Image 1 (cartoon, rainbow, N blue to C red):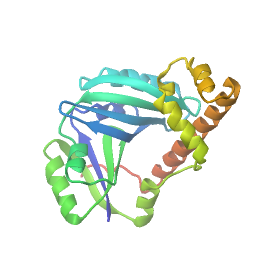
Image 2: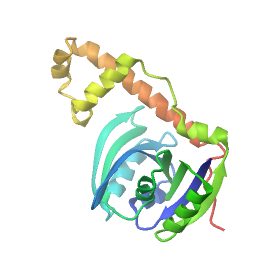
Image 3: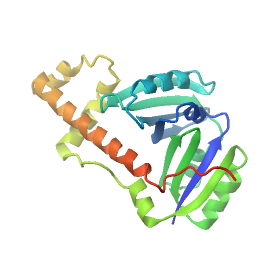
Image 4: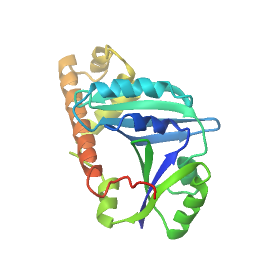
Length: 232
């Protein structure tokens, strides 16, 4: 079965979202070690005000728990940004999930809340409630329908061709998306034995696919069942 848990993680950087109601985040990947947490987070604007993302990132960098914030890639004309966030480690839901071998979970950030979706049992849910209540305010806990869980955990958008996925992996492994001016495109095109213009065209298609996937996901989690319930 699947559950949805909405919390306020006290003194966590996720509270920055409370000042930016039109900005939403999604945890893509995360590495938890002894004293810090490094994660890749997708940041979306829920409207057309693109400049708000820059203000959000400025606010994020000022948070006391934040060590660094690095831009990885921007897509959809700047409406979606992938950023790498490194923060001091605090007791967290993520650590609980990993330590209890709960591998199927999703975390979203919206309006100063952390919204968790995960698969587990009633016993798992009871453990999570007892654990997280020590460090966070629990706003709601509920079971969600199979249809809702499918929308949250499934892939969205157009599936890339294998050749596109291979190229995306190549670009990522060669740190293309970390280059602010992307000047290494000419060098990478030589490695791939193609022209710079041809490689640039393929990169734009990949970025378009990524944008479509994220925008589709936004529309899904803005559906009526994705609602933050006020604390009673």
